[in-house]
Image (tube, rainbow, N blue to C red; front, side):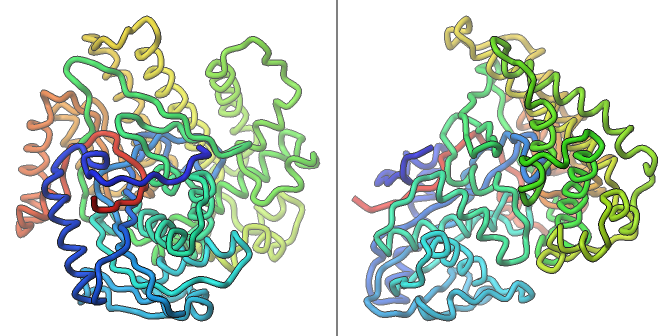
Length: 511
């Protein structure tokens, strides 16, 4: 998308549910800003969290994903202050104390070893100016309010960075495209030691009401809106937070960043196995991804006149068949020495190649085969999910609701397969996520899976509208009341809710 982030003055354009409650929230934010800084904000920048419907841990492998923006979000109320100081505060002041920085100095200094909330603000700020090649920011005051649960798998960090980025560019008279903003935000999170693939930021910036996004990353970033099937009863998504917090900053060396390294090394090994490692497209790129390897292997294939989805499916299935030959001799996992040997380099060269100094990892054995099996099979599920949606929304559908229950069942089955693969092949689930998915399926969910990085956080469930109450009640009785009996009604509402595709990042001005 080449357009700029939109500006709205009516919250009905942003939220489809609970608009009055959101209006009160915005009003409280404006009042708190005025009390803190002595004047009303010039505007409010808003960026939502996201739920990934299907396509987990494959964005940084170059493959497409299928997320949607949701209502929980980060708001940044901002006003230029005419100085060279950037002052930031949070409505949860006890938890997140106020900070101030020089707009041209220490705001660019980010210590990735320090778990400090303002680092994410600095990421959005620095990312924008690094992209522009400048360090001449203007001072402003900002007050933040976030409703995306931290560590819940709904991309609270991406919402934070994206909302900050929007605020900073408006204060400084900059107007970048949505594509540019998403790309900058994805790179910016690396300053806090998280090797983000770009899905979270793209969904937050480019989300559209009523549609999920089929997001492609290679050869270029491209987001295609895809409407969900218009069935009777309607299909909706229930989000259930396990309340198990997975902090990527803390667990990255043994979880998130380790998986990035395993897939990166896997791509390097697969390229050598397929005989494409020496080609320019594979040799002169960092990082090399599974998608680039696949594309280069099929670079000479004639696909003229063929359906794109059919080509995707054919290639992904062929790659899955090639994996055992590439990695099977060490199916139990690779040591560092074995990975280096497979690539014909030293261990120190391998460490430099995967940028371990910036993204440290800890493991005795690296599971290259299992990670590759998940990546290619998950990419295949994403393509098939889109295929089903577009087939049901085709020209012959005439916008009519489908009564065919097999459509929901087919989509749900893909989500269930994804959860199985995340648990068994990518090993990013946990017992609480497995339990929540099992409860929801027993209560009538068509498909249930973890969403986000995993190791805790949230799950997403495809549910026919007439079964939403039953699924939510089962989760309350069988999970929340047992695991979190002291949870307040408000906190439960935050942890368990139904949602539909929502709007992406925007600016709000009062009329």
